[in-house]
Length: 185
Image (cartoon, rainbow, N blue to C red; front, side):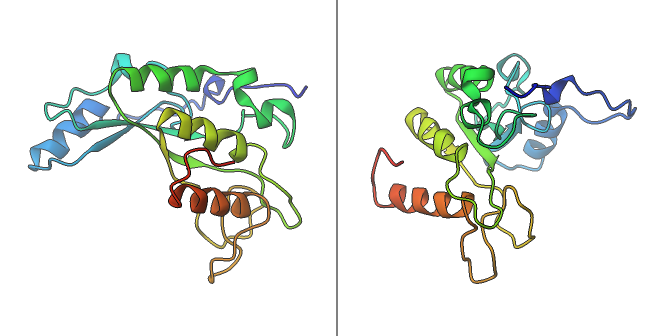
């Protein structure tokens, strides 16, 4: 098994002041906005640790948790921990379930997988999306752009041709869900 280094264990040594989530929510509500506000988790939204403890107080109860779900950080494509991160670190799923149980929606606003030319399948996305579907968690793939990267890109060209692996899988999954199928591969 690959060695695992959690993203949240990294320290960057920057010093700055920033507004907290409550100050940001108050500023949005102060404009008269009544929309749903998406509040991220920590570590580039990669973890939902303590989201319930430190979530902003929204007087309109229009708050949703944001999670960026990627393969277990530090693991190699195709390994068991990459493919099934819940086997190696299931905190995000456990935290998402707790947030849902507290009646807050969870939205995965980023997830990705391998897409270099010739890639077959999407081992992480094909494990993640059925888990999210079963929990009632919404999701958006990252990213819908033509950049030539070998990870996390959904399209090859401006015609929308899906990338090998990740793009092909996500397109098929979205079409399956659009057809009203509850259990899509």
